[in-house]
Length: 503
Ligand SMILES: [Zn+2]
Image (cartoon, rainbow, N blue to C red):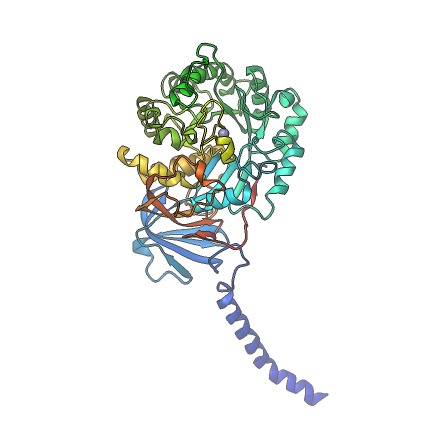
């Protein structure tokens, strides 16, 4: 017994040494262990370096340190030498920018996955540098207008989203006066509500009037979440006549004049005054989606902002890229509502965006089956309205913005920071210490043709209005919470995006 215990005491230092050596090697190699399947990069702790990193303090040369999905430090060029103990992914001159947050997307899932679906939709988003999107409550079937229908969506996203996904709930006449139903939906985590002031085209998503909207705002005030409104109210003045050519874009355009938008916004401003400080709906916020009319409608919104109403407005790349005179008769890929208007209207939209009167951008990606787009008949009056664009919004905004002198900081403001604020995500939208490592890396100077050879991940590339265009700005890599989910045509093996629910 005595001899044995002496032996153990002699061996103990040796065993300790062996154990500590093993722990040391394990710790050294920990960062090199392959991550499950969520990332194309096998590191938990690494740096992204570039000469052009878009931060709130401007564009800097240096590196972003990422650990366990978060940004833990940002170092400028001068101070970085010799500091890197971990792996470095060097992107040279490519731009490192916060990932895009697209607050207006229709992925049609569950119920109409043949139109798009979470799998192809979020894969396209990842390929386009979008790290979070917010799915609209309609075009999926059933519409997301209750806690129960939101649960169907939460079921549908399981293992099927490559980027983070949040949800809007629907405000419809059925739930507008049912406070407990609306509270159930909001408590279940929708980031806010969405309603229509004209027919939505979806049977179980009827339009709301201003009384419904007022009710919705009063419930949202408690939750401090926004109401998004499709602001068009049908006007009698300009009807479609039998003598009009349904293949002519001008026919469609005249049926939805800017007066529709103006009338809706006039109505809305009667209730947004309640959102002012001290008002009965203080805490609620109204967000006008996809503004097309850059004249009276925009002036009204500007006035409301000046008066202290809690109101913001978005427009979409298709209103900034295209104008009515370029749309060929029969080319229903360009049909959307409100419609794409004339070139002068487009110029004014750009002006308003650059001056900050338009707060942010969104895709309003709204695909359908090619059959429903009626591409061969070219009937604008009967075709499904909606522009398919999700994968292309970054290069489109950049390409068409070049002549207006758009900067990288502006892109990050319109596509990341402001959208993050709208959806209440303080840990997203900006490259800053403590935030999620949601990052897009892209080459502003690389041009490409969006032709049949280009890898498009949307379910139905043929219906996209951008096919056939030449664009600038190629996405190289997309990181979602530190996972490299997309890299030059390759995607991570597993879809590890997470639902973003309001608390
Ligand atoms: Zn929409």
